[in-house]
Structures are given as structure tokens and as C-alpha cells.
Image (cartoon, rainbow, N blue to C red; front, top):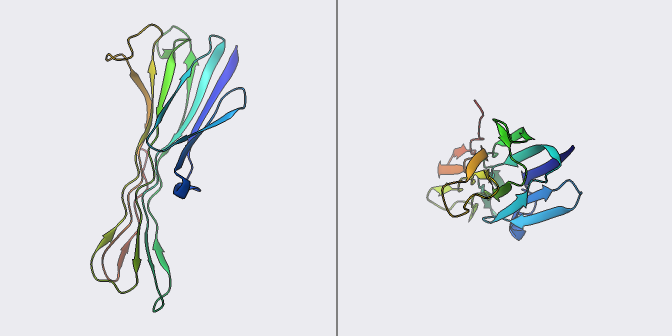
Length: 175
């Protein structure tokens, strides 16, 4: 039996291009999908286990810049990173071979950019959650047969409710 490895991580390095997740399959071919989309993969019959890493979207930042002040960036919080391994088989707590994995990608929260000295309160949006579900072989895709495997929460958005009060976004905590 081989180990199928599916790695799903939120890419925070290219938010302008809208790149959200990288998925690397056991054959080493990377597949990139955009924020707000889903992607399906079928578990091979000869897979012994599936390793999954999922990251929620980071919270949006608040940025101030201008001629009369230093550039200031208040960062959003990080989304959760969840690593889990599932055995492939037909027993309890196993994913049946031939099951379909569906990935939902949480995007980065919207950011806010403002000139220095502008009055008002400014907030970045919270990051979206990422999740993976599976559908057993032969089950109706449009019914209630999808089963949740893992969810990673998004990070909180940054805030400046008034001048002098900078609140970075909270990172998702595991408990």
C-alpha cells in the first residue's frame, strides 16, 4: 500500500493574484486553485493512508501611508493550520477507497488602505475557513452524504477603531 499525500495550504504570498491553495498529489504534480472554489480528488484503491494539511485564510490587514507619517501596517491574524492522517479502508474511522475528497478554500480577509490622518474607524475582514469533506463511493453527491473530515478556521481582521488604538487580528487557536 502506498501513502497518498494531499497537502492543502493557504498561500498568503500572492493575494493580489487570488491564489488560495496548493494541492500536491502523490504523483508530485502540483495543482493550484483559486480562493472561493472547490476541488475534488478520488482516493486511490491502493492508498494505505491519506495525510492532509489544511490552513484557514489569514485576516485582512489595515495599512496607513502618506507624506506626513510613517507607513503603518496592522497585521491580520493567521488562520489555523491543521495536520491529520486518515487510514484508507472499510473499517471504523477509515476513509473507504474510491471516496471523493472535496476541498473548500477560505480566502484572505479583505484589507483596508488609508491615507494617514483620515478620521474614522478602519477594519480588515476576517479570513475564511478551509474545509475538506468526503463522499463514500456510490453515495449520492446531491444528498446529505458528504462527511466532514477537517476544518481550519480563519484569522481575525486587524482594526484601528480610533487614532492611537491599533489592534492586530487574532490568530485562530486550537484547543
